[in-house]
Length: 245
Image (tube, rainbow, N blue to C red; front, side, top):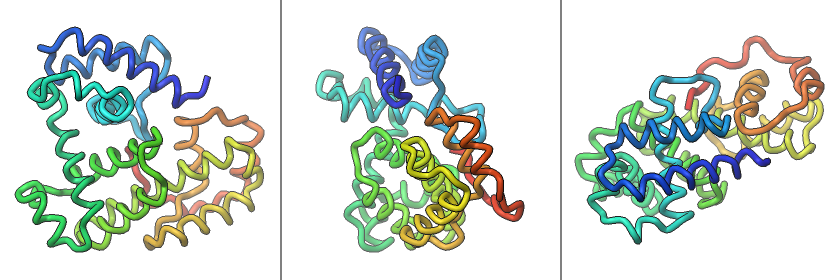
């Protein structure tokens, strides 16, 4: 079964539990999410790393599928949602503000103090939120790229975070092409990743081939023969500053 579909089914199962127990706390929902995922032998959206708060981060997936996929926000009281998804609701506010913003000033005007608290850690989780919207099909790739470029241009102190996340996005996109059979050789992969980075327009955002393969393994089933072929000409100098989602 398609891994995206398996994740959606698991998230739907979690929601069936959550809506029957409106008094659950955030940490309890995290444990339910973990239990359901493990029972279905799937894992949260992630890059190469496996951070200890990975399932807390995966609440973005639960919130997004619940609101845009299932329309659960129409049936649950707002205070119930806020009790569990206060962080994700902030990310939604940031997403809407960034979509409309043409400058840092305009973005921050909409967010107030939240803008002042936008450090590397919060920015990384926000970027994960908007990638998750894209992954599940609720925004187009062009919007994802636009949001990356805006955040990069608005916040000089977050440029490295955005650059590293862009490498993750490119790695995922290359994985899509490998999975579909469009890329089969190291030369094709190298050309495509450089072209993607050029089109996105964020400097020094070309991921290493080994990073692409490792990220792709968490989203697709890649034949070993293809992986070995793609890694034949890996540049050992590549890979500095790559991202754990």
